[in-house]
Image 1 (tube, rainbow, N blue to C red):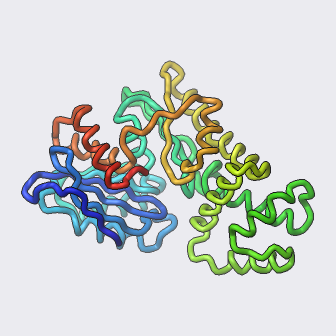
Image 2 (image 1 turned 30 degrees about the vertical axis):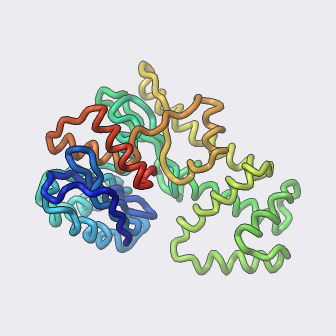
Image 3 (image 1 turned 90 degrees about the vertical axis):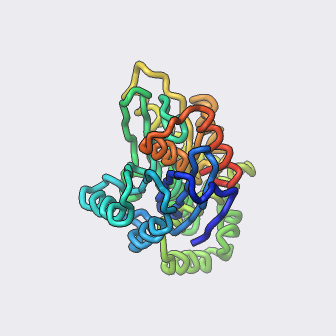
Length: 328
């Protein structure tokens, strides 16, 4: 676990806190009434579907909350996916924090941060993919987020898996058209370029992965880089990913036909300029998130604590989070 300490709020000042719990990392941020940022702590992933030690991660962070914490908001991957897990997540928080708290899914919290409660659709694409839309009047809908077995289209895992499928089709000759993809992709993976040796090394790579979904998802960065270098097979994969993510926006708009829904984004896959621009060709430029996902939790916690939250406060928190490098 790592800790960063920007300009700290005074120890006696009432504070609120938020936890953003995802598949690869869990982030705790603390903010004072004046919008100044307190301790920021980072832990391992806490998605109960991916991480066996998710309870330990949450308990460790909760145990380090300042004693003056007036309210806490959590956005947790996997929350409400099943009743059992949702209850277990709530119990971990109840046993560690005596003050008022709220829990929602990590994507709902990211949407709150992106639009600060106004209408919009937030597409989250990291290891998995999901969208959350709100009409700004209390209506909300979740699109996607079905997991890697039969969903998560357009996610980092989906892109990585498609790239591996293309690689294996090239290795055994089922694909005769995309040879340009082979050498740069295997080189970026650190695999040999001789095909027999490559196939053996590929299976060894996969067989030794501790976290297969996250490792496969990390290959999306390679595909994105190759796409931005102009490699057509990689560009095609990224365009297909963009098409899937656009389908999330289309579905959200059908749920709220009377409301204009600007789109915004979160998640590591959207570090790809090619992906963002591919979606923008259809839906226009994305709205820059007003707050990162953990900022959405801080906004929820401030309201839960009864603080007077206005645009100036949101801007101060946004600047503080950005200065601390907390942009996603």
